[in-house]
Image 1 (cartoon, helix red, strand yellow):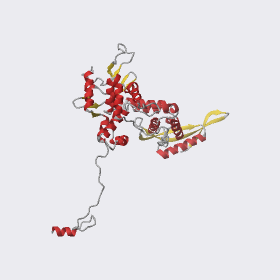
Image 2: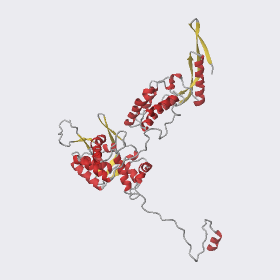
Image 3: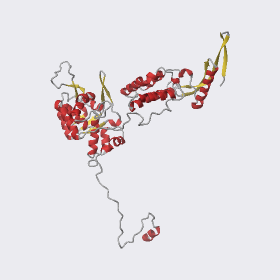
Image 4: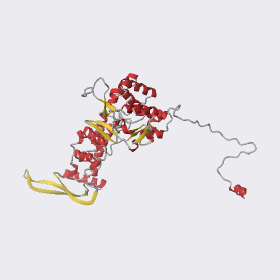
Length: 436
């Protein structure tokens, strides 16, 4: 690849202006898929000095040696934000709306301030290392660091696929090992005992009996918060004593977002204990919309300033599901404090609403329920998750080993039979004599 010197008619300081041109062939790519089409096209780039042209020629040769492709200057100059927009658009309809919104939030909050206006071809491994260090230094949770970093890396992957850059500069920059980030404490659930569940539920029930039932239901069904919010009257089968998990609901600005459970296994039928079925039966007897299968199973309460609602009465909004976040803040958390249990606070490990799900798992395993069955009730993708999270909570006295194994002993031969050493060699000659 030669560098051609070109003299122009225009002059500067009485001398002709000189530029340096490089010509090369570039592999064409399909605009839709980013894959090579098998065709090439001639490209040229012009530089004001021989040194800059020589540097670009070296870059082209390195790209061709490493990937077999040459990246044009125009694509390299596109802003990082352009590829971020294309990456976000490519995920529309492929992931849940809430997941897509989280992708956008991660990009806008952590990646865009640093890289949105940068040319995609100007991002280097040094920039990636600096970005990683800044995420760690901000004291973010490890999960947040990982998701922000993945967003950054995957946008660069798209730029590679589209031929804008020859390689991903973040590919050689790993995240810090576990333990190198400040909040890398191991995950520790806080399951409650049956007595503690009864104490919390009893305290809530003093003022709001229905919400006392909510505590019992969550602790003895193992549903996730969004699954609980998504329950409707038609999901409960009192005759079979089961509840069907088939949707989720999350409180959003202006209403509720209806979605699907976390995974395929999360769509499940959970059996309920007889006493809990009877409590639900009594609740549905008083439910004003019990004949409407789409009515929320557990209603929210009207706010204090709701028009036409008496403040002195515990007025329920039977058209709106109970928001788990509101339930935790206004009912569950105060009850925890009253009965002497630590509530979860920012930066403080304590009991969360999700720990009622852990309570169900631990109580079931401790009562002798098989871990694979408990995994099915919880809707885990794999029973390995159940073992990893709850294995240490299986009490030996209740759900541990039920049948002890005897100490191994040797068998003593009878006096009339000589002792013969154990062997796995079969005497074929004696077998033929005995069968002949």
